[in-house]
Image (cartoon, rainbow, N blue to C red; front, side):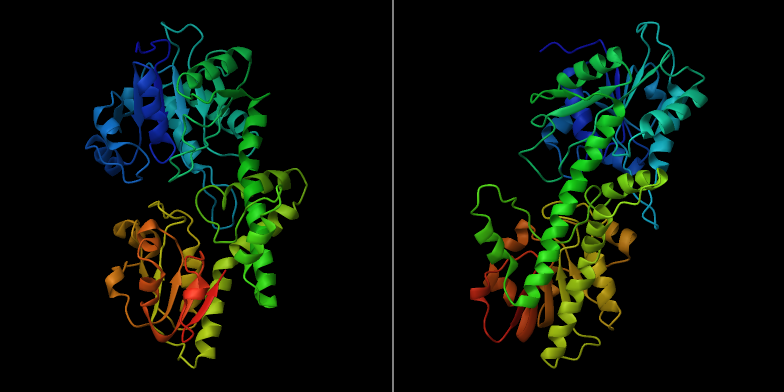
Length: 436
């Protein structure tokens, strides 16, 4: 296969999103650079190790992608792709510092190109509220580079759709939304992504439309899960199992199959706040979206309080109760700890004098300590527990089987099954069992 030479590409940020994108471009284009400011991350990737487990390691070892922390490698680039995270701050407001920093890095190397008369284009993939690309990033690029936006360089936006741990809906197999500030830039963005996405591209009407499309994808999912969580709170009071209700309702052809759970991660639990923050600047206070966020953000506390009630009901002393928690990452089968809601459970338990032991088959112990001050406990150390919380259903835990998992607690213990990993019919009557 002949590699394309009409664009020299640089991907800024090599995390869950950026690394697969950079490798895909390197399969189609001759000159591709992957840039990240995290020295440890770059060193690992150059050794052929990906801590996110999102890419094929053999491809990583053989790729022509140049992975670097050296900004000088970005000189002469014609097609920049920014894939840095967009978190929220302690007040649940958009934190655009990573986007700002990435834009500044790009601006310092942005230049007119002798070999590319139309000049460079900067495409953002980071999830933002409508207007950030053109009204926030564009001026940064223009000011620091000394170039004129729309004349010397162009802007584009193509929202990321990477789903960590998903081997079916990959970058190549998922339709890519693309946009540009004018028809020429739109065609250029569509052409570049069309070379790597076999599912095809969708040309959005404008950059703001593409930005909005991304942020509502996860807002919609967040609200549907919030509904399931609220239903689970109701069904718990009625005394029926939510999973049983959903199994029955799911037999109707148009019933949406969502499930209750902890809503964390760097997308679903974050993106709605970008949209609501933008709405509030325009004088509109969102009601439905924020109501869903309140429900989902409160589920960790609710789970912990259920555990406390069961301990009390069993006459097990709450203070210093021996409690184990399986899983810390934000979802099953990924090592990503960002915005996990499991720490909400831990924090609430500590309010009652319990210091939980946490095991996780996928999480990096050093990162767990850095992010949450936790020392992960090996699974084999979780024995004779007063209570256990099955918080994240990693394959390693599901593979043990319900019978093995139930042996973690003593014969009068409490089992809190957030992910409904265990069939209630298999739980001995001596144990207290509850699932979300």
